[in-house]
Length: 217
Image (cartoon, rainbow, N blue to C red; front, top):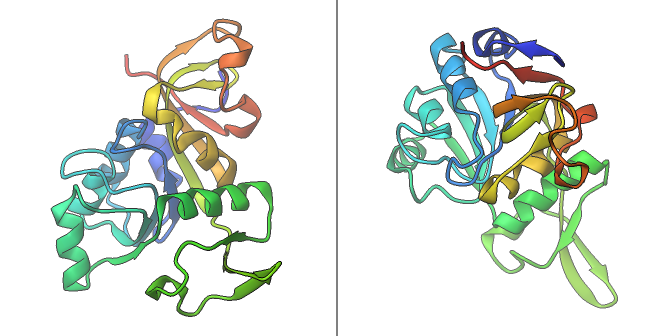
């Protein structure tokens, strides 16, 4: 099976200060066993790039509660009061941006693009320090690409060569995040033989996946 690892072994690959893109939408599609292994290891100073920080005791919220996140680049933190408290106290750097801008910056990083032009954020504090580009008389912010050392993604099914299939809102961020991590680690609810996942249901092809977490015995 492709790059098969136990969660604790995968967590050993992540060094202090690493940048992590973590899939999920309110923790749906977040690799919980991988998160638990990182918390158990206790590696800190992490930069987390994700849609949100979930909630206490769930998904990325476990990393926040453990004090392992130095910087979070997310679209909102409304469901996690611990994230809010750490940001206000200065223990956590939190960069908030519109959800569409965030996912497009990740997509640009994965596709090798030089950035994204968007009008969202013009004439607000989002504009501060950013380049303005004029196209056909219209002004746009240039938002730079986002990449990460690791992409950690949760899937419904994986096959033995790493093709991934998602369900429901797990599809919102995971397929794009899988493009922008230098090392991609996937955790699936079930691992099936090649051919069980219909070709048109594969949202992340196995060529993008470096490691697949094995199921617990």
